[in-house]
Image (cartoon, rainbow, N blue to C red; front, side):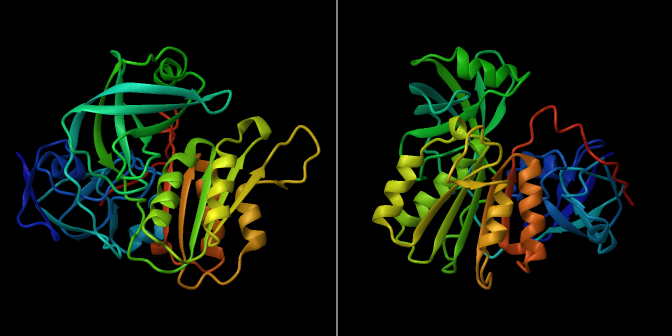
Length: 344
């Protein structure tokens, strides 16, 4: 027996089958429901349960706090209805709704950015056009391996898609891409996904924080803002472990030289040699520089521990949660590591 779930921002009720989450059913009916990780880790699909009952599968306390639950909030990606229900996703300052595409692409270039990060550029062969907002990601499928999520690093107006793939220990897909993928090979892509996209109508300061290959969506966000003529201050912090993990430094230094409103700050957390660069965790470097956050928006992408630390720091500094747009790069090994959530 299916349940009828009314989504406040959608025209009519959707049918949710037993065992199916609200988000799964909504996406199956092409409802542009805000979402990110689809595994209870990021909080992008946080919603108000206005009526009805749902069961919540385990989720991260970072994505849905005890205070959120007390206020009647749920995660659509973890919510399985027990009755007919009405939900409303949390409104953002801007709304985007790009059509979900399934593309066939061809690898046109491969480049080593660091010892463990490969830049992959793809040409769309069929299934386009591919519209997305800066900061979003897509699910890539290579060879016969399962799909994995990677963020677009190019601007949305550019025809060639760019991805930065880091070889994750134990990751078969990232290992194949970094070590075996060849020019001319076919890559299947589905997307776009994600809610940590550039708010293009925002005219206040932009704080961009990237860790490791999290530079990919942040690159797209910063370059798109500048390309669109943004005049507000933009400060990009890029946190890595050591010198060998830094990449595209010359690129962003050159951008800053031609755009006086852009500042670029690399931060090393574990430098092996003495350095004049900022040292420590990237969120600590941001905290040391923080000025007035009134009217600012933050975009954060990279390892979950960095994203969570930076988010907590900004909240403590007085930034509103709705002005923090974060994309935590959870690995397949990370996703099952959730705290226990309960549904009502």
